Length: 466
Ligand code: SAH
Image (tube, rainbow, N blue to C red):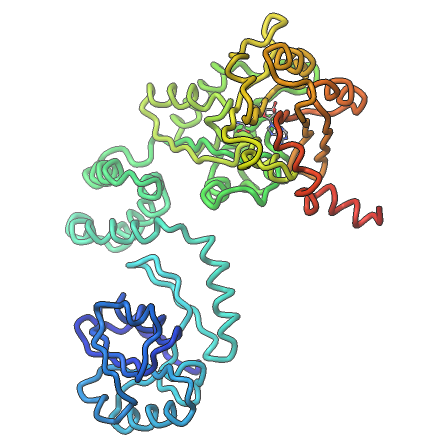
C-alpha cells in the first residue's frame, strides 16, 4: 500500500488553492463541499471561479506567506516552477500538499469520489492511472443507488435507539442487515421515508419481522436489456420469485437472479393467458408467504400494462409494493427504428392508443386521432391494421400519410415495414410479421430514411456486407 486512505474533517478549516483555471475551480468546489474555508491565490480567475461567492480571493502570485494558518494546500497552476515551490514551502511547514497531476510533489493524493453522502466510496491507483480510477468509479456508480446516501442518513437517526434496545452486538448486526437489505431499504430508495420509519419502529418493538414480503412491479423495457433502468436491474437480482409474460424478452429474463423461481403468466401457443384476477391473486399469495416478488412487465407497467389493477389488489391487501417505470415500446421502438416521435416540422403532439379489436371493431376517438401534425402510436394493432388505416383516412387523414409497423423493436429480430395509410396493410401482410408489433403513423415516419443509419438492422446488414 503506497498511501493510507483517510477522510479529513475540514469543516471551518482554512485551505488554500493556488491557481485560477478550470482545474482549480473543480478542487475549490470539492473543498467547499466538505465545509472548508477556501482561499484562492492567482493573478487571474476563470469566470466560473470568479463567480463563486464563498471564497476568499487573493489576486497575487503565490508567496510562502499565503500558507500561514492553512490546514491543506492544493497547487493547480500550469507553471512547474511555481508548483514545485508551493510543494517545497508546504512540506517545510508540514502542511499536507497536493500538486495536481504530479504525485512526486504531493504529500497526499486525491481519489476519484463516488459521493452518496454520508456514504463515500473513493478510488485510487496511487497516482499510477487516474483514468482507471475514474472508470472504476463509473462502473460502481451504476451499482450503488443514489438512495444509499439517504439510507445511511436514515440509519444514523436510529443508531443510538437501536443500540440501547438491542444490546447483543450479533443480534444488532442481524437487525441492521435486515433493515439495510430488506423492504425498509427499498422504501427509502423509493423515497418513502415515513413508511420506512414506521416499519423500522415496528420491527424494533417486536412486530412481525419480514413476515410479509413485497412486490416489485417493474418495467422491463421493449426488449433490449441495455434499456433496463438501474433500479429495475437491482430488483431483478434481488427477487425470490419472478412473474413474467410473453413481452419480456429472453435476454432481459436472463438478467434476473439465477436461483429465483420463474413463473410464466403469459399466453403460450394454443393456451389462454392467465386471467388478470389469477395474476393479482398469485401476487398477493406469494407476498403473504414472505417472498420478494418481481412482476416483470414489457415496456412500462402503466402503459397498456394493467399495472394499475395489480397494485390495486396489493393495496387492498396492505402489501408493500413499488413501481419501477420502464421504457415504453413507443419510445424504445421509435428510437431504434430511426423515427422521432415529435419533430418541429412534422408533429407537435403524439398520442398512444391501443388498436385492440373488440367485437370486430376498434373503439377510438377517430376525430381526435385524424388531426394534422400529430404522431399516432398504436399498440396491439396488428390484427386491426387494415381497419385502423381505413378509419384514419375516412376521418380526414390523407391516404398518403406515412406509416410504419415495427416488429420486435429494439431486439435482434427488429424489422420495419414502411408505407402509407394506403399501402401499409398490404405490405405488412406480405411480410408475415411476428408479434409484438407497433404501428407509427404520421409525417415523422418519412424521416426514417435520413435518421436510421445506426439502427441494429443497418448495423447487422453492414456486418453481413450488404
Ligand atoms: N406496457 C407495454 C405495452 C403492453 S401492450 C409498454 O409500455 O410497452 C403490448 C403491445 O406493446 C404489443 O402488442 C405491441 O404493440 C407493443 N410492444 C411492446 N414491445 C414491443 C416491441 N419490442 N416491439 C414492438 N411492439 C412492442
